[in-house]
Length: 358
Image 1 (cartoon, one colour):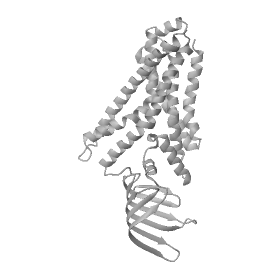
Image 2: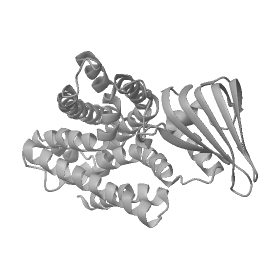
Image 3: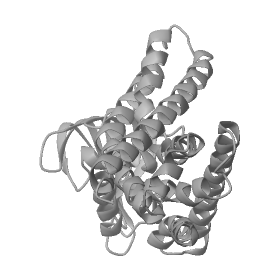
Image 4: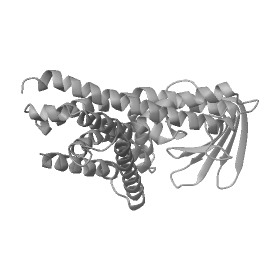
């Protein structure tokens, strides 16, 4: 039929995209309300209600990105189920439009939604999440993040760097640099009250104390200023104190390269990279999964049952993802496999079930 590639394609795609975005907005709105209620318990003189509101609002893009596949599943189930209840799909089938033809229109909507998810996860969510973390950090005393009471540690070649506090990614406080020789013996400990990043990997240190160790003596020197050069940059510091799932893929690649160069474990960040890559594919998979459901057992059921089925499938997908991701980290599976496998399994089920629909 000649109408499908034009009018019907656009009609179905617009309906599916609109329904999915409405469900996404409802999901995120509910999450934000509950999150603000939770944050309100921490409101104090240093952390106002306005700061809590801004913090919660800035977390919305990341929440939307994480909810995209499930919201797409439920939204498309509601949209296509409504079309089936109004006999629109029956009329399309009677006019000669095949299930695969309708699936093509749904796939077109899936590509648009997958692109939106990718743009949200790469361009909007990471900077918004960073700003939200900054607001929370300032309310807690000006730290970017603290991995322990003693600050956080990073490695730079033969150096191990302890940062007590980070006013920002370019301004550090209570810095200690432990440098080891080729035989893994401690050779120098450099302490600085403050450090400011200048350029090309150089840090300007203030109130410096340098302790040098040899076989026979320990020599201590004090300097007002000094320059320290290394591979540690603000980009690395921005990444090391942030949840990997909130980073853009380019940031993850930067930090993975840094970890590999220093022979450190990078599996967690590789997994986060592949999960970022898979999320748009998961969004498309969830859409395709609705076709056999709508043309099958959900053809004549109510909206409440469709929502229930969508939630159950979303929970199953989420649990399968989490289970295989953690199993991959524990048992040393390739991050690409543990990230891709759940989505590929659901995609295979969707394609096989769609092919069997008559």
